[in-house]
Length: 171
Image (cartoon, rainbow, N blue to C red):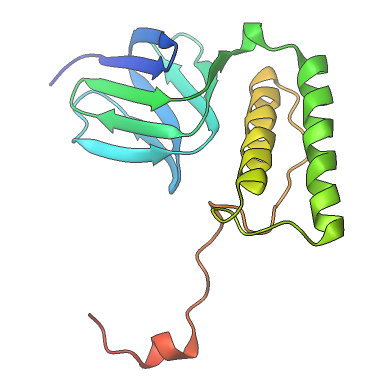
């Protein structure tokens, strides 16, 4: 069993982070997962959120990542994502201004009745993804915005079973 996990985060711009760590926590679409040395192989879809990693007894370090994929093994975690930022790179004033603009655009779509289910409308997808990315940056900075629940967002709870589902024989 390995003593450390090699954490590597890669974006389209190149390698954003490479570190030898004792443990990593990352946000998947099914919830957070952790990786420690000796982890079984895992492939996970990531949602926008915070990656936390720790080396020894030092304070955990954190960064924000956008949606992507993670591949874990016994001694390595590779994260492929479109977005990556560390706390020092965040300007909370600019992020809050951008978040207000995005939320205003979403509210206009809701008021017009034009907010469509995620996956069916490119404008809705872009706005919700941008809102999530900006909220993750503020969370990383330590000043998170109030929580929002968007109708039709990709990663909500599964729909309840229908009456037809209850009568179907198990597969």
